[in-house]
Length: 324
Image 1 (cartoon, rainbow, N blue to C red):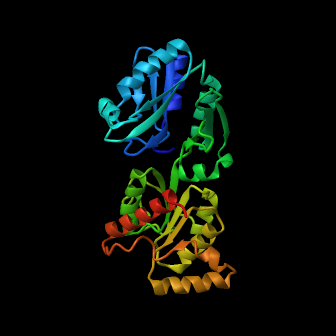
Image 2 (spheres, one colour):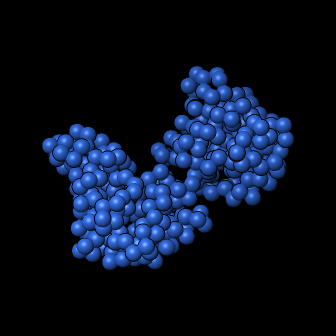
Image 3 (cartoon, rainbow, N blue to C red):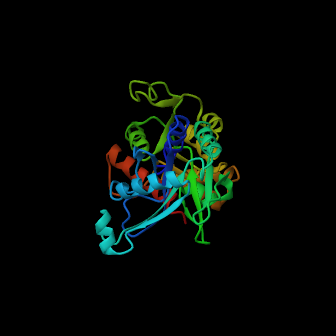
């Protein structure tokens, strides 16, 4: 699931079923130094209990007050904070920061059926988008494929018409790491901290042991077989680290045939030249091979495994968040 939208729909559903008046507040637009991204959510009940965050604490008090009133009225509200520096200061926003927040009472505005479907989609790891009109409540769910760029980049927001808000509800991003080497020991933790589900692939028992990777998911099948089983999609990053063509090449071929948004391969420029030649021999084009980030990661000058892992994670983030 995205960083900005977690279990708020499920929690709102549980509170509503328990007989509590409930509203969901969602950041639908931001400008300047707003402290929380678009799509961030908070659930509020009629007594002022709340979970989640729409500003990191800056405007929550004001939002709770409006949410309680919206629940009583059974109508949605659109709030704007920080239009001027004075107003930003009044609600605790950084100078010039602005946010627009939509409050939707569950039942009268946001149908319970939608919350049920959002909850089911989360547990089935199925992406979906919530779409509504911020001026006239018309909530509905659509397939994530209807908004491919928003789906791939986890970018909720208002469309060009100025009133259609699209909230992206995605399953977790994944990072498949081929090669349970020293770099991977650092990379799995970084990936998880950045919201990715890390999965290790290494058929060599000595490398992928539980002692070296306690609590991690490690697949011991051959890389191409493992990657096909994992069904790589557009929210998957693949990193090959074995430095052994017998293991890396099958994974690279499978990843190039997939929709993976990132493919990075360990090895020097000379190593990659040999890799390119082998891929051309089996029919891959220059454009297809050009998807590979090699040598993997940004050139930060680091030499230690943890430093290399940082460079890889940074490149993965940039590829996802700043698509060309």
